[in-house]
Length: 167
Image 1 (tube, rainbow, N blue to C red):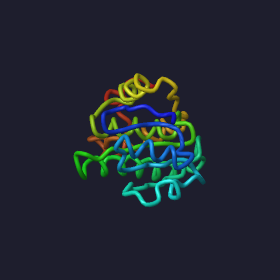
Image 2 (cartoon, one colour):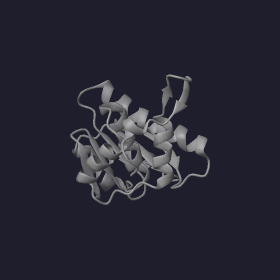
Image 3 (tube, rainbow, N blue to C red):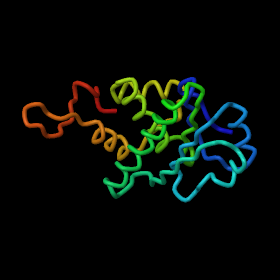
Image 4 (cartoon, rainbow, N blue to C red):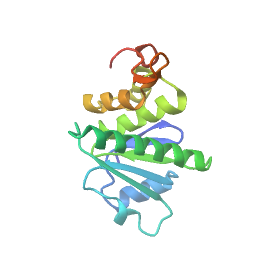
């Protein structure tokens, strides 16, 4: 099964294709699965297990920015919530190939949880999984999600000083 560990508790990879893949993840201690593969639910593969499944179907280059923002932010929060719930929890984040959508979610999680710039988070993910290449629309969605309020106007503004150079 094609996946890599980004942190000791987060694995990133390709879709779960059958019960064998699901069993391999269970052996590795996965307690939660965050699925971003539109139209490909994992329910049947994890039947009878205690794995918590979270489904956020997203197209690469989603045309609806509100839907993309809601799903990517929801997936980031699913990862955060799973890891915060118990120290033994491990999360598998996947899309079809583990290259774009799921990578964007893990980058976003690292930006939020470790206060990394997008460039730093992307570099960290690519150090563990070199094939990672999030769609530019997903990177733009992350920038929108992580906009900080401008103290002068109390309006949202993207602080380039915090999120580093464009990736």
